Length: 311
Length: 111
Image 1 (cartoon, rainbow over the protein chains, first blue to last red):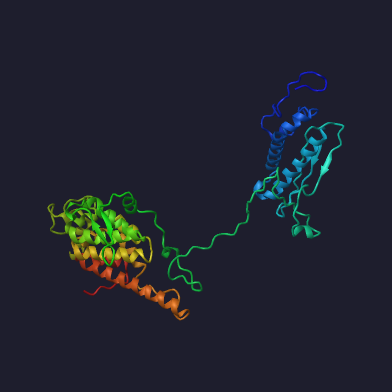
Image 2 (cartoon, each protein chain N blue to C red):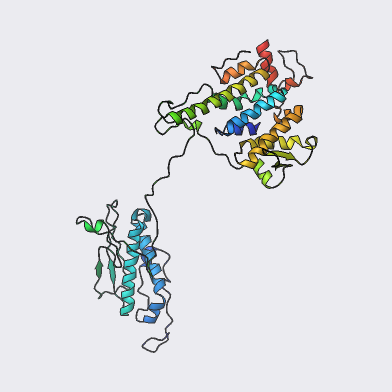
């Protein structure tokens, strides 16, 4: 790149010396302001870094961006953009000083974001106050005299409008089941129906692992077993079908209910494995009743309960 | 057993009668399971206790149709719960009434 003096000058990258701090990000004195082509090419970079510096400055001054609001941030960015475009069109650098007051009503502290770049001692600072320049839509606050007009921006080539709703209305309260009328007293949360996740039965059925299918040939849909029931692994399928009782959708609910009925009617004593045995009691023989080691009830709490009640 | 407990803890008007009917079916066809159910009363009975003798929260006279429907639903659930408790008490053995009274203090069983 050749400047007017005819000396080949390698342009310095912007903010090459800063360490990421916001204060040093304001310093653009090393930028070659006399070259309009360079300004035009790095305009986007300059704008990006300037807005980043403004945001970080706002953070350091104690303002959260959420409390500022997107409109305020957009006003800042738009003002920076307008000044930059003006500066790029004029082809000269000016010391620009912003004084900006957040339009949010909740902010009591005055936010004075001073951005000075390309500062020269002889350049007169331009104070900017009030709403950002740019296209505006009239708002209700603009018609009032005591409230300064809130800048509202629309999407443009250099402006990105965020559709963030700070105070979004909350969702409707969930329905907690029967007994809770619209005018009646509220029912405790213990009675609320708790939605269950997808059951293992449903997963296995969707994967095609169950030996049953729905038989639509009759007047009412029934289930049909692919294998004989004496070949069914009760240890695996019986808890699975009992787990499927929680399903309310059609294929799984029908399969679970009728499958449990068939398995229970056919299985008989094999269904007793549904109730897992309690771990072996610390005393193998019940001291109260006459059950000994040979009694299977001695290993459960049932024996002690029965013996305590009978004895 | 974890499946039954999970089904009863859904507190759902549709799921709970289904699970209770399954328990009745199991105890009717496999009475040996009644004894094995005794250590698990702690998992089953609190869920049933919430529906025993429970009155509808809203008077049926406020809204006749909706109140009546709710009352019918309540009565149906109460009936299913009472039948399930009766079968559990019948098949649970000799000493299980004390355990049922532990979780249902107002429960009376007439054999």
